[in-house]
Length: 351
Ligand code: MRU
Image (cartoon, rainbow, N blue to C red; front, side):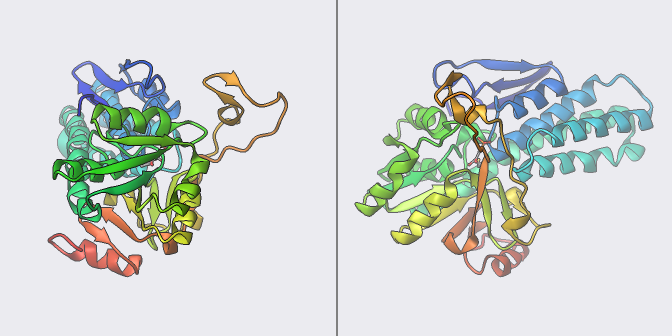
């Protein structure tokens, strides 16, 4: 990739500020956990895997900065950072998955002592970052066979390098197909209200010179009716055991349209996005964001003042509308719950 979404530096965490894209390529230099948490909450960094990586790096920063040798105090302070990170955004399970990985390291502080635990927390955060890129590339390898030469693909929101440690899930599949020499065209939903498709996906695909057309969210139906879309690939923020998938608001509508028009609808996500603790999408907490994101665009009011607005940031697509879930272990097909168990048991790739 020509840019780095997030990078560990000796004195802090460097985050590409996605609020400024595509106009400006600016980086935030976060020197403490609090500023990383703020970057996640305010969506300077966003996308399920990327916020997991950011939280882990924020925790690692705190581990480096907390000046105590007393195990109990160190543990208490890091636990406060877990809480702080966990309160940033509720829907993407990768955030809690990453915090849990860091928690397992902290739990061994009695064995390793404070000094080694500091280093072990940094190592774990760097490992989460490195693994995410590797996992994305595997998702790409498994998913690329779904893209035929000449395909016209629709995607929603941004599930690319910007939303991960650096390659992408839905866009990772597209990059892998491109690297194999396939030719295709990507249609990009603008993704109201935060315009991740318009601002981020269109920018990312342009950086990679992938042919793309931006559309408003309400245009997807007509393109499908005209037979101009053969495949939909989106990312995910949390997948329940039965395959119900939370992703950016508007995804559910795209899935319903896909079913009506017989267009296969795929979700691409790492297994860290699967929440094994929940049976169905009904249990997924949906973040509600400020009304101003709906009433304003780019800080400018577009709705009459005083109007009420509703702003759920995600919706849940029922598993029945999903053709397959492209993971690093293979493409999971229905029945998802049964095949998920089989997939996790299998040592090699699962198809
Ligand atoms: O609110 P956002 O921008 O964090 O929402 C992001 C999405 O919905 C993505 O599609 C999802 O996190 C998958 S990213 C690989």
